Length: 90
Length: 420
Ligand SMILES: Cc1cc2nc3c(=O)[nH]c(=O)nc-3n(C[C@H](O)[C@H](O)[C@H](O)COP(=O)(O)OP(=O)(O)OC[C@H]3O[C@@H](n4cnc5c(N)ncnc54)[C@H](O)[C@@H]3O)c2cc1C
Ligand SMILES: [Zn+2]
Figure 1 (cartoon, each protein chain N blue to C red):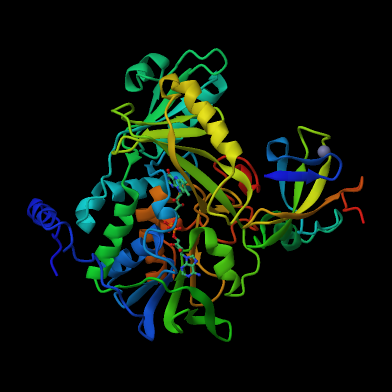
Figure 2 (cartoon, helix red, strand yellow):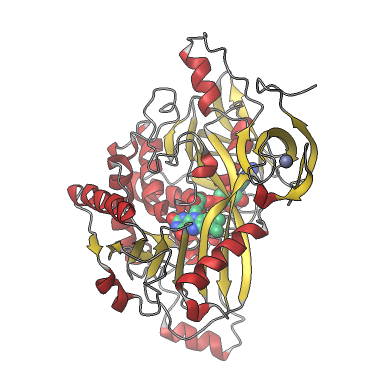
């Protein structure tokens, strides 16, 4: 599988580490609601189809970014760098 | 119908007639309009559940509904390692009960599942790793589960072709569970299917469950490609498809991710290895099948996947491991590789519980370890369905343990399913 790093271009999957589902919104740190935190930490939609997920170009430029990948065909339709605060760049 | 169709006599007779006259081992059932219990998924767990419902609880008006054919899922794709060498008490007790059921399984279901207690050895390559094995071994012994800590000198005769003195990854010791071993995977599926069928269970193949029927919040049965089937109780045991199927019951988010696990088999060779060996370096496990091929596997590919095939990095990694520790196997050709979809839970431990909807029961989260669980899982799930309450052995395997802070994280990897 080739993954297109927003910075380095298409590189072998072996250069990347997986960071999991990026579609789960993280509660504000000031949010003390247990249920929302448990949801964020433990519950996943686990789609058969397109998933937004974190990848780390660990053996390359070392940036974290988001990829949209199909979990059946593994085709990556888009990748997107992250802002310094961890949110997706527009 | 008699239970002993497979005798020396029947084998000889059928061989003489070109093996054209074997009878199917179970009826091809058309679904009835309603059942006491409908089980979604005809893998090892679904079939075992049906068998124990009928045998232990006298609930025989049961259907197992399978979208493909019996044995086509993970039950027919795994590397067949059966063991109970877990550290955490909830896992240890459950898997030990499963192992005890394995020990009597061929007699119980009158079908030879070729359970071979050839031992499983976990090898350690550093002394801290050996310390963690000793700790796990002690936890096992407290639960009355057999295991022994071995030094390199004891391992050498057990695994004669193993390279013990690798300069970077020396084998400094290991933990053996002698009662552990292998079984014949598809015999397990066929044997449970036949035994359940004999007790009156309908096994409905080529019937995909496409949805559920509701009465308010209560689940009253299933929608299938062959029409609706009503059920007082609906039990779901679909392994890697758990999220997909339960979404149709209104459960949008679960503590589960689907990942692919691969396995490989080499060309057959003469007797090479008569135990199961696993390596603490990079995670590799290997055994030799009865046909002579070396069967090996390791970690999941590491990213969510519903593709029943894997990528090349893992095969390269595992082949390197195999050639490192068994240099004499380095020239073997790999005959086949395949993959199966794992229902990886957030703590690496299973879920066997009454569902959050009335009428719904859930069996999932088997990760890459569910084959060994087959008898125990079916037994506990049947108990849970029949009594509307868990058995002690599966009381900890709930769906809401995560939110309650009671996760059972054997590996200590945290809620990162791709690391378990
Ligand atoms: C390569 C590999 C190696 C493994 N090695 C080991 C090992 O050494 N030891 C061990 O203990 N475990 C191992 N496992 C894990 C083990 O195989 C699984 O955890 C276990 O088989 C899962 O339970 P099951 O048998 O019920 O699953 P399956 O056989 O997958 O059964 C689930 C069934 O549900 C059906 N289904 C899905 N959706 C629907 C639907 N909508 N309607 C109807 N039916 C549906 C599927 O077709 C399937 O037949 C391995 C797995 C793999 C893939
Ligand atoms: Zn990069």
